[in-house]
Image (tube, rainbow, N blue to C red):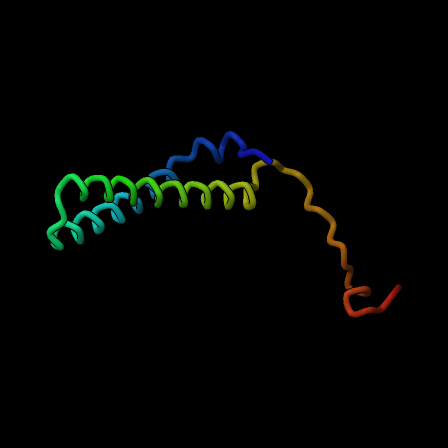
Length: 91
């Protein structure tokens, strides 16, 4: 299933991913800088953390948006269990 146009163009989830990954990168930079790590190493680790966090959050975000999209207007799928057969009773 693909994302619909409304979900794909919504900017808020992408802004939240950017904010969270920047926060993780900043705390990584701050920790490594206070530990006395060389600036070049610090920059590489900070960029790596930002990319990893952003990649994981984008994957999670797209999965959730696909699962919870209400813009397709498809009828809900019928459930495999009905009220009578849920407890082993047949109609």
